Amino acid sequence: SELVIGWILVSLPLTIAFLPHDNLPVRIRPMSSLSSSSSAVDASLDATEDSGSDQSRTYRYASPFSPSGSSRPRIPSALIILNTPIRSSNEGGRLSGVLGALWEASSYRVCADGGANRLHDATVAVRGIGSESDDESHADYLPDMITGDLDSLRPDVHRYYEARGVSILRVEDQNFHDLDKSLMAVEKWVGTMSSSERNHDEKLNASSSAFIYGGFGGRFDQEMGCVNALFVWGKKDTFQQTTLALYDEETCAFALPGLPMKSEIRIRFPGESIESDEQTNKVGEGPTCGLIPIGGRCDNVRTTGLKWNLEGDIALEFGGLVSSSNRVIDEMVTVQASSPLLFTAEMIVKPSIIC
Image 1 (cartoon, rainbow, N blue to C red):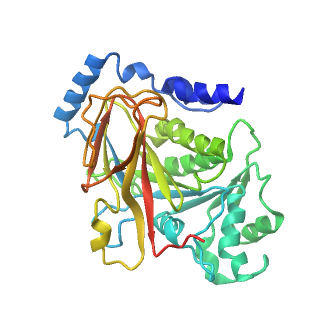
Image 2 (cartoon, one colour):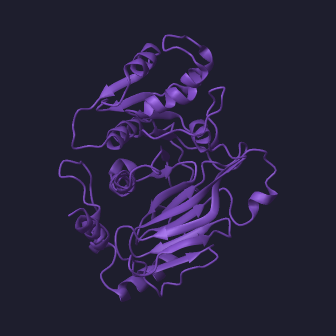
Image 3 (cartoon, rainbow, N blue to C red):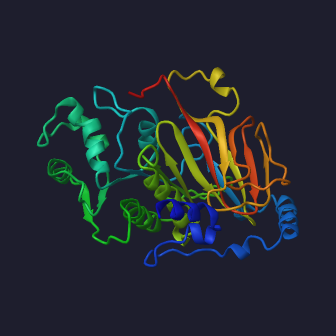
């Protein structure tokens, strides 16, 4: 029965494959609003190309790993740490690699239940500091909130963070995953930001970002749950101007919308740029990438900026073509797709910190 269910997941169109739980408060945009026929798709693609000046119709991903002092506008960003092993800390209890960079780039941090155990063990326990210690050197690694059903949160970790003023919120509802409950906290944070805190730079469509760390490398069903969250929560009104992305130390992924929107993607290390980068510690998205039709067949895809660009004449679908092991060669990649896609990229961490 598990094999049958899995086959159905990748075979049904996006409206079924990513249908949320009945109690999940999300708004799903009908697929009929994206395309109705192949000819309509072609016309819509051409129309989108002609309206390039319309900022509201463009989804933009700007790498959060740009070096300090770059011209990229800094936008309010949240970080969610899931309950997966943290392999990016040193003996001094300092976060490094992708997680370290995301921590520095974020202004609001949430641990999803057992994710607090992982953070504690990577930044506190590794130094042999007791749970009652008042060591100020780790004050920067205090999350703003720990939430979930809290069935995985260890008592010693609970006491440690509670004593230091971290908000701990138990959400019992089993209709939601711990990631959903963490995104609820981020949603509230995004919704309560004042207009002065939001970045309305017309060059950047997203007014906030949410980094989800630990979405890969565990059980496959949990990975699919994290990918599903990108599509489900990305359709909520609160997140319409928020970039949602999954990360670990080896890969990242984010959802690209279908028509009428187009996408512009700027990663940290396109082409061979890493060879000319003068920074000693290099962290960011690398050039190897993919376009995955995770929700169902995508009839028409056009791209620029890739080594093997798609020209709109071949559909992407499981059982057919999946654009994997492609390569970013330009500073900006553009994607125009008839249906939503998952964009993936490798993560580069040099020197390597993976244990």
